[in-house]
Length: 394
Ligand code: SF4
Ligand code: SF4
Picture 1: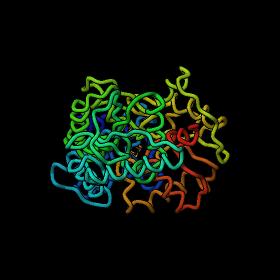
Picture 2 (picture 1 turned 45 degrees about the horizontal axis):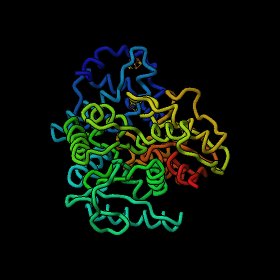
Picture 3 (picture 1 turned 180 degrees about the vertical axis):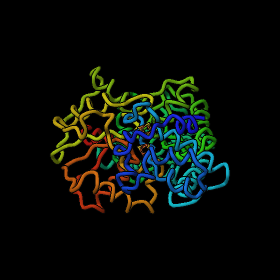
Picture 4 (picture 1 turned 120 degrees about the vertical axis):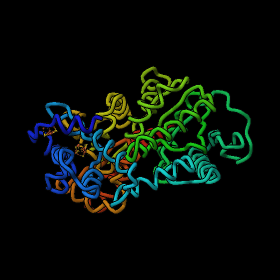
C-alpha cells in the first residue's frame, strides 16, 4: 500500500512543510505532509486521522518539494478510503464530499439534479444564447427516453456528428458563460453538442472519498460514452476531474476524447476558428489549477496559448506552473464549513491580493476563489478560458 510505504520512506527532513496549503492555513506542523506521514507511523485514533487528512486539499505540491517525490495527496486518498471502509465519515469535509458523491451516484451530477431539471437548464441556456447572439444553437440532451432538443424540449432525432460534452454542473448554474463557450465552439466546428442528462458533470468527487466511489463514477462515464457512441468526447474545465478522467476513463473507451482546451487550441492554430480579442480589466493573471500543472496529463501549454490569443497580454502568477498554489477547494475543502480557513489561507499566502482579472480554468477553483475573494475583499474578476471564448465569439 502506497500510504504505508510513504510513511516508512519519509525521512522527516521537512522540505515539504512550507509548500503545504493546510500548514500555511493553520501554522500547525501536524497539518503538514510530514506531520500527516508521522501519524501513520504510530497508532493514531480515527478521529485524529480524519481531521488531519480531511484538511489535505490533494494539491500534490508536496510531491514536488520532497526529495523522494512522496505524494501525500495519494496517501490522503488511501487513508480516506480506509476511513470510509470503516464507516468513519465525520468532520467538516468528508460528510460534505459523501453527499456530493451520493448525488452523483443517484442522479449523475454533483448537485443531484433530476434529468428534467438538466433539460430545463439547458433550454434556458440555449434561449439566452439566442437572445445574445440572435440564433439558437442546437443542443441535444441525452435522457433515459432518448434525445431531447434543448430548445423545443421535444424528442429529437439522433445527432449527425455528436460531440458528447461533460460540463461541470456549476457551469450549468453558476458559470453559464463557460457552458455557452463550449456550445459555441462545438457548433463552429460542425459538431452537434450532446449533453447527457444521465451523467452531466465533469467532477468526480469519488476521488476525494474512496476508491470504490471513484471507480463507480468513472464507470458511469464509460457506460454513457459507449451508449452515445459520439464522434468525440469533450471534457470541460475541471482540474481533478481531468486527472481522474485521463487515468480511468480515457484508457477504457473506444471513442476519441479531448479536453476542451486541446480541441480549441487545435481549432485556433489550424485556422479553423478565428477569435477576436476580449477587453479585460488589467492586469490579467493566469493561475494554473493544481491538477492541470501537476496531474498525469499536464495541461499548461494550451490554456496559455489560448489566453494570449483571447486577451493579448497576461502575467504569470508563478515562475513555473508546477509551483501553482491550490485554491484550497480541492479534496472537498470547498465545503461551506471550510470557507473561513480558506480565507485565512489566502490572506496568509497572498496578503492583500489584487488583480483586474484572474484566469483559472477549473470549475472548483473558480467557485472557491469567487467566495474567498468576496470574504477577503479582493476585487479581481475570476474567469476560465471558456467564458472568454464566448465573449470572443463573433
Ligand atoms: S497534497 Fe497539498 S494539502 Fe495535501 S499534504 Fe500535500 S501539499 Fe499539503
Ligand atoms: S519532504 Fe518528503 S521525506 Fe522530507 S518530510 Fe516531507 S515527505 Fe518526508
